[in-house]
Image (cartoon, rainbow, N blue to C red):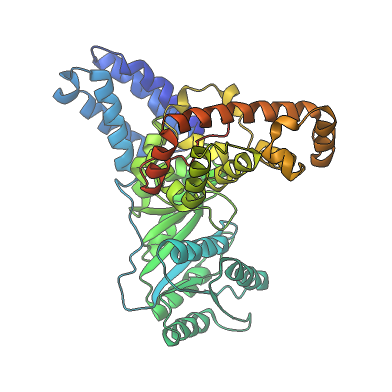
Amino acid sequence: MFDSLSDRLAGTLKNLRGQGRITEKNVTDTLREVRMALLEADVALPVVREFVGRVKERAMGQDVLTSLTPGQALVKVVNNELTAVMGEANESLNLATQPPAVILMAGLQGAGKTTSVAKLARWLKEREKKSVLVASADVYRPAAIEQLKTLAREVDVDFFPSQTNQKPVDIATAAVAQAKKKFIDVVIIDTAGRLHIDDDMMAEIKQVHAAISPVETLFTVDSMTGQDAANTAKAFDEALPLTGIILTKTDGDARGGAALSIRHITGKPIKFLGVGEKTDALEPFHPDRVVSRILGMGDVLSLVEDAQRKMDAGAAEKMAKKIKKGKGFDLNDYKEQLQQMKKMGGMGAMMDKLPGMSNISEEAKAQVDDKEFDRIEAMISSMTKKERRKPEIIKGGRKKRIAAGSGTQVQEINRMLKQFTQMQKMMKKMSAKGGMAKMMRALGGGKMPMGGGGMPF
């Protein structure tokens, strides 16, 4: 997400950083580029106009003009104004009510609403430690009810059964009643989507809303529809008291126009981003972190949070002790490192959050292939236990057998072993200097983004 916008803005603002003096001309030239970048990202025109106007006003103010580093001061102005456009800070769900807290999900058909229900249920269960019940009031698509039932089983939350011959209001009220009986913390009601906004749909969802009085009414919208997403959200907001937005399919949206338009047009906060198809691919929306990524400054905070949540600190500590005792770093450890990286979303997801990635060429980024992790795992899995413990014994005949067993070529085995040797040397150096123990302690305390030994190459 924001790939094209990030490339354009990072290049434009890089020229400003070294400027010793800011003039009206170079501010105007810079903002012309910024305006074009935003419009190409499909940001709504009123949003672009207001944003550019505010940046220009602040850029010509005394704070920037008299700064010792005026170029960097102007970059900071752009950073602050972009953050303001998207809502300053993350707005979390308001669940401070007598249980069950009811969440109503609305949206158009095809926006990923039912999947978002499951993602949100999993997020509430794992991150907020809440018990969750989900129910489908979409009586027009039998497949929607079955889909939610399957997803509820996958994320291990309660499912309230419903039938297509029931009224949506009856399903919603019965689901809330059951949640009360079972002392469940949160109920999420999935409603019917349509291919377009129509009066019947709005009347129906208004009835459901009135019957269950949800604490959160979330609108699910496809980010790839750009500024149309903001206009659709506005139409829903006029009919329903929306409390927030879930922006879906952001992993497939290189422009990001919806994220930059929605808050300004609707006045409603984006609360979550759908960042993939899996049920764990839901992230709280932090405007300041997103802007940092847009401007090429990375998002280390999110990277640290991912590490704390997804990486196995116990396994990393165990490996550190093993290396410290002189037992060495073998191919079993290497495979475990790759699996830890995959839990973090792979190199592609991590690179997006690392500072300075905007300075890396597109050719270099294109070479990062997370499928390589799977190939390396297949190679190691095709080895004997002895080969994994003592890679130095892997010679000609063994390499051919491993290549045949993993569906790879001998050249790939050679390259993997070379990467492993480099990693092994790095681990040995770190262990000798006591760096490994420090790294493990840092990981345990959530002070750094990488687990034992860092990247696998």
